[in-house]
Length: 215
Ligand code: ADP
Ligand code: MG
Image (cartoon, rainbow, N blue to C red; front, side):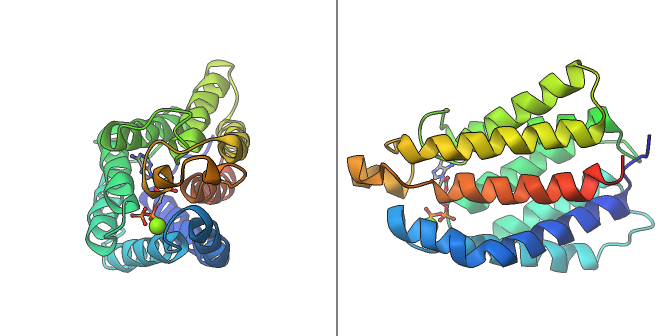
């Protein structure tokens, strides 16, 4: 079993930024249908700022929790949209979940994913069924925890999280939104995937590719 290091977490954020960049147009298009068309752009600005901040970290002395708390600050400062404080809280909680660990094993990475989901939920006060990123993050965290309980390795836990997020994002198509801008649309939001759920899939896919490969 390979331990996830500070360097691996920084590489994970590089991977997330690249994946968001590749999907930026699609995410903003989705937001254009049920929101204000900026989601791809805001996520791209956020993860670029994260990578800019991480590039200034001393990889030799920073621990994994510092990578996450640095990312939280950078994301919050860069993103004025709703997703800014939501992901900043996710990263702060993730940092708290792995605080003091010099390297991360499977259990710590699953704890990190669960802490992110819980942080977004606590901050945004959305539940499953509200047509938000929570419809992807909560099932993802539950699936990762279930895979861990079943004795799966890190790569399998992260794949389980990704598949659950994909399925969860699909379910948002049939929902009416009760949180965020899309809630103003009522039934007109039906038939369209929530952009925040779509970007959660992009993020979890990049995490699975980046950290899963290391296990
Ligand atoms: P804004 O709506 O301010 O333009 P973004 O476009 O960056 O922000 O993000 C929109 C996404 O934020 C939505 O698609 C939804 O997934 C998510 N969202 C909105 N409100 C909440 C909330 N209360 N809890 C969780 N996620 C939310
Ligand atoms: Mg928007």
